[in-house]
Image (spheres, rainbow, N blue to C red):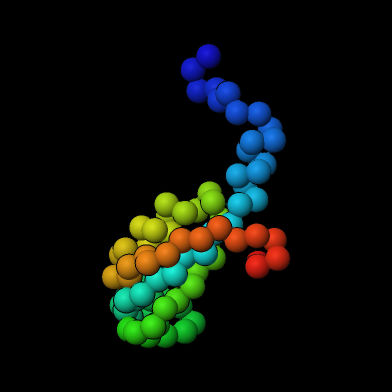
Length: 80
């Protein structure tokens, strides 16, 4: 039927619990980052932890802020 998925409940829950860490360089201060409670440096790496379900949204935000993702790695329960 249209709009239904073939994934079982176990597949959905396993992807929902996956977390990734982005290593980002080149973020700059602008009108969007002024809303943060901290400044962003122009140099150095920033590590951003993102759940699997928000990876695309976070990628777009980083791009808007002028950043470049240099590494994406999955996190295990011990690293979180």
